[in-house]
Image (cartoon, rainbow over all chains, first blue to last red; front, side, top):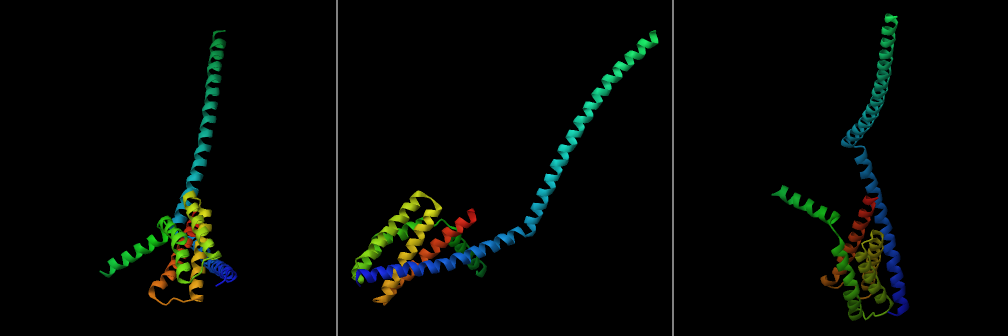
Length: 96
Length: 127
């Protein structure tokens, strides 16, 4: 076999192997995608996703509730201070 | 007994699919560097451009394995597979596969293809 024939065989080998590889690669990609879809739609993943959503919602509700509690504490402190001053004023007016 | 055989077969399949392929890749690369050019030169009396391609593909794959980069390993594995496929074509186009020892080239083509598929699978799952 001459060098030219060898070159053709080499190019043929690369071309043939490329075609074969493309076929197997596409098949592998399709199978992987199908497996991924099956895993995403399986019961355990749905349950896990549902749990995640619930935990997120509960975290947000907890934060909201904490903010409300802080606001209420603030209001109560303000009302306490007002009450103290009003009592003093009442005492002062009674003494008059 | 049958259940044990089925379990063992399933284990083998999982190891083949998901096991570490780097030692196999190294072996395939070293065969391309040392053995394949020698076999072609001695058996088919072909010592030319293709042998250079074989050695370069083997060295390239060894380089990629040592580098540890997945995309480089994939490229290296593809060239190795091309090299074995080309070697098989060379044999089929000249003396054929007269003895069972020569069928080893088919085994090497299958091994290099499965190594290539294993790396591609790893790449797809990492994404």
